[in-house]
Image (tube, rainbow, N blue to C red; front, top):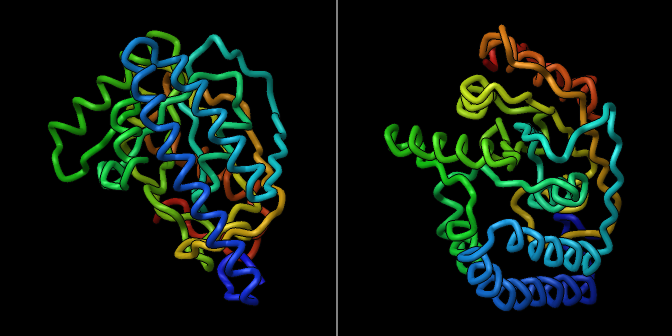
Length: 253
């Protein structure tokens, strides 16, 4: 079996080969993306699409997108997605293929070899939660990017949820960014990614990841708590395994 359960030697060998190919293609494309980003960040992000689609093909993962409302790719949004697997990032890139996206990422990810170096040097928003002043400066930088037409993606849970968790408590920073910029929040639910690659596993399985993109939520006149509550409820309503795991929204805010 795949997706976190050790299978036959043949399956383990295939997993190791796939992992090696990902390491190699990441090492090859990362310097190119960083070099292009020095001159044109948007073009560098388009190169990342090639990396994303190749690796999805490598693992036999399909992404199906369900949009519940029309979105304008020329308009910036704060996209807020649940987070269960490393494949969530790839699925969101494909689901929002016509957008220029920058990710709000914790500083720990910049320490991942090669990938972290590229993440740091291609215009994404790096947050150091232990340094309040740096975190505020990063959110201001995100606002500048959004004023230029770039959308921002946040994982409000802050990290991947476990197998027995519908959602983790939300962090507040991304919602403050939406309130300060005035740009709408668009909730997203990624389904099926946990079965493809569970947290703590390196063996991924083929399959389909469904991405549900909700309607934009206006932030004018709303409080931070109200926005968090609306995104929280949207995610729970559209998660395919949350019916028996509906924690209190108030406790999570």
